[in-house]
Length: 239
Image 1 (tube, rainbow, N blue to C red):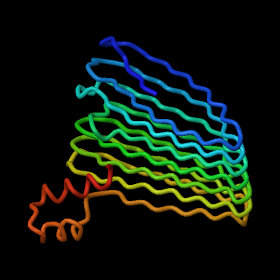
Image 2 (cartoon, rainbow, N blue to C red):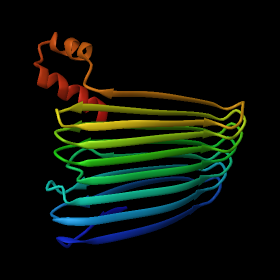
Image 3 (cartoon, rainbow, N blue to C red):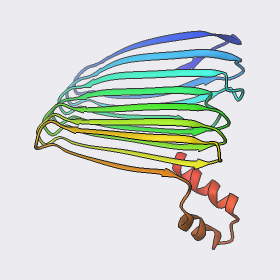
Image 4 (cartoon, one colour):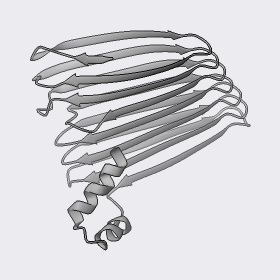
């Protein structure tokens, strides 16, 4: 899939409905190229059903104009039937973001699994909002939601990760890593874990703030200066 926009200004609304049957394997690769644009509101709403025993991966990479006039909303609602697997990878690390709002809301049935990953690089006065929701409704349902953000200059980033353990023996893990560089950066992460079924298990891990000094020291001991060491660590985080 490839999405773009040819005008300098405008509004773009995309609606996708995916109905994926049982016992199939599907791989999606999407590029959203919104360059040479002064001001654009791009909104994508996706509804996806994945049938029993099916395997689906979706990789979405964004390239935005460097002037920061892009506002992107990407919203995905997905239902995973019994023993289905879905993997999502959302990357926006090569160019400026402008403003972005990512929402992923997943209903996960018996033995099904969702693996969600978002990586975003914020520069100048970019604004980043991420909300990832795992609804572990089935028995032995499982899910992982992982967000990695590198926020520089005066970037604002807000991440909300949610996991709901509704099914017996369901397992969920949410993880957020936000690395900052710049005195005007403002970042936050909010984990929401709610166990409804006593046999469910949910875990959370978060790291917010500057790059750890011990990581820098190890690389600098090998002959790198601080800036080079920071770049290696950041590239490892968001590549």
